[in-house]
Amino acid sequence: MALRDELLKSIWHAFTALDVDKSGKVSKSQLKVLSHNLCTILRIPHDPVALEEHFKDDDEGPVSNQGYMPYLNKFILDKVTDNFDRQELNKMCWTLCFRKNLQQNQLFISNDDAFKIWCIFNFLSEDRYPLIMVTEEIEYFLHKLTEAMGGSWVEERFEDYRLQLNSKEQCLSVWELITLVGSGLFSKGIDKQTLSMGITEVYQELILDVLKQGYMMKKGHKRKNWTERWFVLKPSCISYYVGEDLAEKKGDIMLDGSCTVEPLQDKEGKKCLFLIKSSQKSFEISASERKKKQEWIQAIQTTVTLLRQGRVAPHHDARQKRRELRLKQLAEQEELELRMRELQTANEAKQLELENMRKALEEAAANAAEEERKRLQTHTELQDRYRIDLEREKLVRQQMEEQVAQKSTELEQYLQRVHELEDMYHQLEDALEEERRARQDEETVRKLQARLLEEEAMKRAELEQIHLRQQRAISETEAEKQELEKERLAKESALQAAMKQLDILEQERQGALEQYQTVMKKLEDAANNTKTWKHKVAHQEGLLRLIQPGSKGPQKITNWGPAAFTDAELSLREKKWQETKNQAAHAQ
Image 1 (cartoon, rainbow, N blue to C red):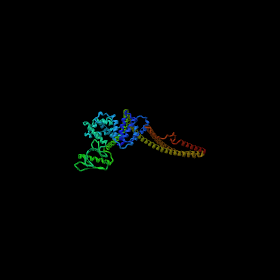
Image 2: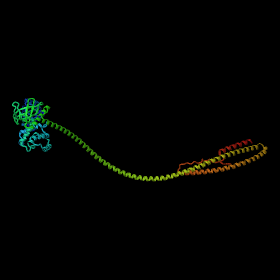
Image 3: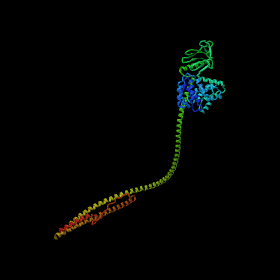
Image 4: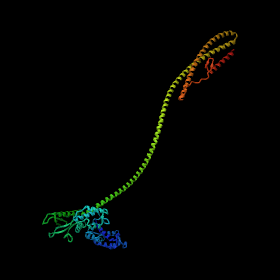
């Protein structure tokens, strides 16, 4: 613990005691007295003018702790050196504060023991104000006090007390600690004197830095005699006194890193000897028993080792380690709390998110239920519709099947009609073939008739020539009439022969005409047959148009029969016959 921090704790108690009404402020006159006493005990010059200058703006009013601290640091603590009596400073601060806060008649300890506990509290308390002692330090102090009284530490009892502390603030003030020890809660069955001795032993170890103490024999340097002394081991020296009351100090054995301690053989009737070699002198010491000898040697060697390493006393080092551990645990706890808060915040956010998700899910579930209800309703409607459609489809299918059956029947009838039409078509083709052959026969007859007509025309031409010659012969001379008559007779006989031949031709023409009429009858029959089939085909499908024979013009009837020649031919023949007749008339 730094000197400034150690002084501030004691001064804080004094300043707090001066704050009678607990307003956090102290009158300037009281601060003057406190400052003067501090300067006197700390052996630094007191400057009252500096105090007046520092508080000149306060108009003699009370000064708070925050206002007094700058002056205390600047004019007192900054000037302190380690040449003062710390116990005197503690006594002065204790005197200022204990009457106000401590009720002595209710405790089983003396005022001196309460002062020692107050000093121990300042040593073990935390470096923050107001001063408190945490649970770990309380347990450390009570455990050490129990061992100093020769008792056994009961962990369960302190655990019960720890639970009571946990229900409060997990810490104690100095007056609560003094009350706890003075109430005898952790010293039941132990008398007041033993409790006081235990407090004194812990006080000497923690405050006075007494590492070990006890009676041993010391050999003198001049007389070489052995004298019993009370030895006190501290971090830098071993002091020895006439008695354990420390009233008369006989000397010091200064320790440093070069000091050594070693056991010696028994001699001069002394046992359990060991030698302490310092930089100045060597000291022969005799312990009462071998165990104490070993304890002292071990304690001195540990102290020298600490001096070599530049380390403080073990209880200071242990306190620092406990504080560092607490700070580390506190930092870890704060970090854990921070993480827990972050996790809690994240958890709350997550819970909020989950709540929102739950609400969203509930809403979605409600929507889904509504959608499901609508879907079921729609599904039911669709099922009804599908059922109706299915029934309708079945009806339509049944109708379609009936129509298909009907169409199949009609198809069969149609195929049957097609077969019939195909048969009719074949029959029509046969009829057309017969008609074609009849037309060929007609053409042949026509050609034959034309040839006969041509021959008849030639014969007629010859007969007309003959007739013309006869007329010419008659017109030439009557004389020749006889001769012409004879020739006429000859000609007539020839004409008779020709007429016979013409009759024969007429007969042949009649035969040809009969043949023609037969052919025409066949043609008419074929045409009628074709027309009948045409009507049948048109009646069945109306698809086919039958080929019919071409129409004929009005037939002419001549001496040689019907259709012997056309009107044009007849006109030509009449014209030629008229010209011949006219020529014969002119010739006569």
